[in-house]
Image (cartoon, rainbow, N blue to C red; front, side):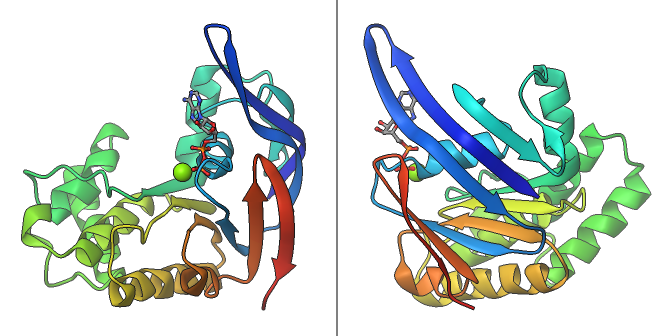
Amino acid sequence: MIKLEGLTKVYKMGNVSVTALKDINLNIEKEEFVAIMGPSGSGKSTLMNILGCLDKPTKGKYILDGVSIQGLNDDELAMIRNRKIGFVFQAFNLLSRTTALKNVELPMMYAGVSAKERRKRAIELLEKVGLGDRINHKPNEMSGGQRQRVAIARALVNNPAIILADEPTGNLDTKSGEEIMDIFENLNKEGVTIVIVTHEPDIAQKAKRVVTFRDGVIIEDRQIK
Ligand code: ADP
Ligand code: MG
């Protein structure tokens, strides 16, 4: 599903350059559930941005579901991103003034799905993440864990083959974090490939494989289930 060969990312700011990822080789197969760990600044978010086609590598290959990402223009990257990938962020990134239902409907509005279909699908997804009784709540009327579940429902609208989540439990208490991981575990059982970044060893234990980064390189890659 994901194949990285000699992947390097250098950020250049004026005459300063930072090598965030150095010559990374990594394969993630369909239906894997991978936790990415490592200290702050080790390149985890840089990796996620590249995996999600939000950023391009400086050097090396990224093959996503058989498609080589190099050479694609921004529109083509956006198309792949919309078709294949669901994103979940630490800060939820929900619209605060609008209901859970509308937050989940919004990406479908952009995609031109009819009002009736949108509503049906959004309700179905909110029920799937256990929020069937909160569809008309706004983010500030929900707990952090519930907000993150809305964000997961929104990430699922296009039936992504891959979910990428950068510190999805970083703002949550332990119990809510575990509930989020249970949702990912169920999605993984349904066949979705999951890659999450986390600082917390207990959270990483819920994955099937743990890949640890330090200073832009992989220092450990362990199958745990
Ligand atoms: P992590 O998510 O593991 O904390 P990052 O991928 O965010 O690490 O950062 C890796 C390194 O790249 C850090 O040294 C960081 O300062 C640098 N970096 C990240 N994003 C940028 C950027 N947009 N511009 C310049 N340097 C960046
Ligand atoms: Mg980060």
